[in-house]
Image (cartoon, rainbow, N blue to C red; front, side, top):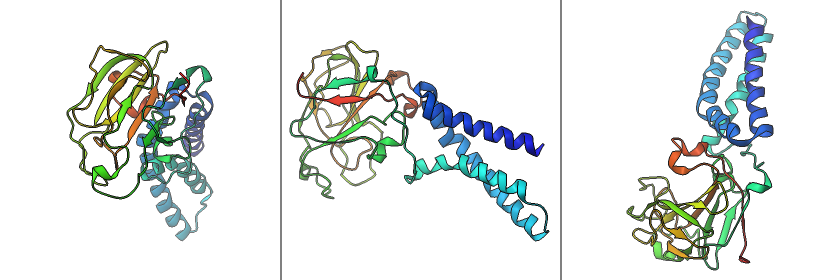
Length: 267
């Protein structure tokens, strides 16, 4: 029974790693989230039990070889919980195919763009592994005054051409560096991108600043709103996210399959 249980755990761990790091795609996005939110908490409980059993067996001078093996496997399966703690040594793999990449224009003039694997607040999740946060100088000043941030109230121009499928325009801007948010995206625009079977998310707009509505076709570089500080955000910025899934169909947004963006002013 011990061999069967240990073998099953090893196969499960192997399947998860193969799915995420080699197969990729939508399967990987779901497996990553299941590992973080379901497998990992169960593994932590199992790990604690095995540690208790290990101590008892050591006191009774029993053979602990099987306990050590179970501890090793459950420890590996518990590691994804570190994603939620912000201390994960592993980020979500960015292995999308090049044909899924879109060429987008920078949506805010004189912007500073944060993204990529080093930007760990995004790189931990399948939906945001290719996402970007856009700010302007000055930023990261620690002020609670919205006007102290260079990007606040700046014009936002659509990075792509496409059809607006959803907007939110009524959420108040929150005080920077606080936890007063009421939603994740705040005020947003969702765009079905022309010529691609994918979607662009623009989030954290200023309240009542969005100038387009559902069903509107927007052209690249068209004015669509102003940068605010609505939603889950520490300071004013624009969140830009490209994904395969229609965001209106995602019960669990973090399970969306993030796709690459290349910013260019040549279009």
